[in-house]
Image 1 (spheres, rainbow, N blue to C red):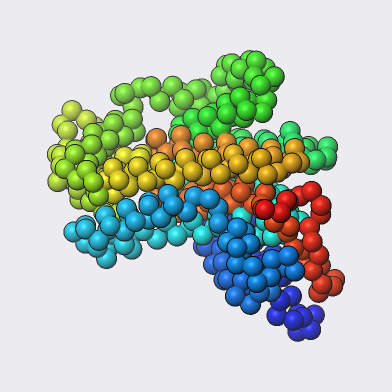
Image 2 (cartoon, rainbow, N blue to C red):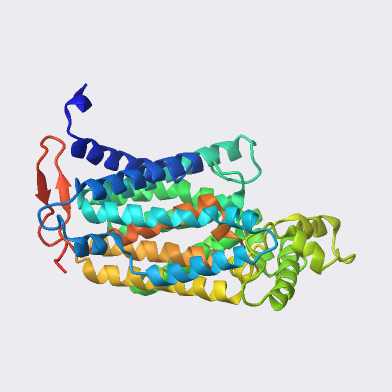
Length: 431
């Protein structure tokens, strides 16, 4: 077996590539596969750092360079947010239960692992992106097939809910659209255009209004930031799309403004109850628990609302809004730290474009920034930061964006030869 003839650094290098590409694939359709591959990726990186098997001559033994390679630039707000969450959990009525619910916060490891991998191995950037976009298209096709066969009433990909799928689809569709215009060659641009077709219809037929709004916010950002000359044509296409769209889609979009819509009533009622809880627990919140019991403590079913609406209000354990839910969980201090964290991620993505000269690479980072905006806007309507599938993809996308640029020369491992090579000139600059 060829692997038996490899030295440990070479085995780790191959495992590094395998786990990164597996993570890029699984994150689109399997949360179990995504977390297993992310765990393997993190373990391999730790072993490489400890053993020094992923360090070139330029950085070997240089702890300063290692810190520069690992850090993403938002460590202080991340520490503040984690501290607020831990304090709120420790002060809650059931600290152990609250601490157990913090597990989704550990998915931030994905941003660090992906960014570090792509900074160290710039030749992995394009394969990781295309694996991600291709598996997203395959998951979209699978969702469309199930919908066409009547197996589901809405497209949900391989996920358990349409809201999960919609939030994910908005993010990867933005990256696919940008790739369709900015790939280095015509073949890549046309391939991305083909992949965007099932992705678009899978998002459209999910009927997730928050995802619609999130996608629109991301596209408007890109039009404003990159494609200003296309803005008039885009507005015309949007008008035409509104006319030719199926009635079910138009009705779904217009229901955003209908206060009598059941799901709108659920959200408005939950947000009002959430405001009462925050007023009582303004600093550290109630801890990271199922919120249904707290809802029942602060309010009673409204006889003016339909029974299904009351059932959702008093039995759903979150408040269909990332910001309201975080404020209830960890108070205004936790919410302020979260906003600081997201603003810092946004800022670091902007700085990454300055370090990245190639137009194609810059476009990828802008796409990741648009996906971040989509995630944040969608968060006004759903608790997407608490959804494991969504937040895992979110941090993957952030790592993908920040991994497009760095402060050191990347080290490449040639599978045909165990020697290390420095990355191509011009891709990175020494700090």
